[in-house]
Amino acid sequence: MKNEKQTSEEVAKLAAQTLQDDNSSATAKKLAASVLSQSGTGKQTGAEIEDLASKVLQSDKYSDDTKSLAGSALSQSNKDR
Image 1: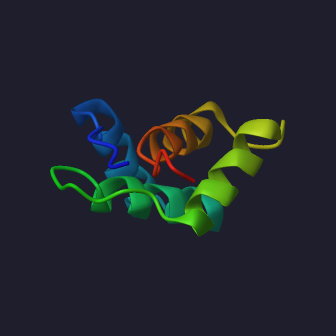
Image 2: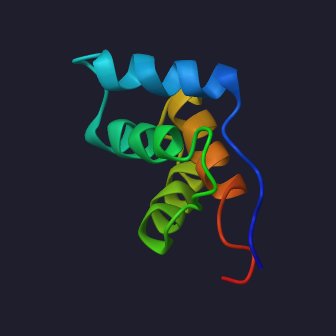
């Protein structure tokens, strides 16, 4: 089942800032790239990013911004998976 959700403008801005920030973690940048690639497209989150996003949301070591990116990525995942 296709998921029609798309990245919001607010989350897209956060993702762009994350990618430009040298202090952002590799995990945050991976999530940000995924979120931006889905902005304005019909693309869905892949299984690898779904797994990463799930782990981020379950961990206390990530920032609220990284968790926002993870939540956005998960909300755009394939509903059949």
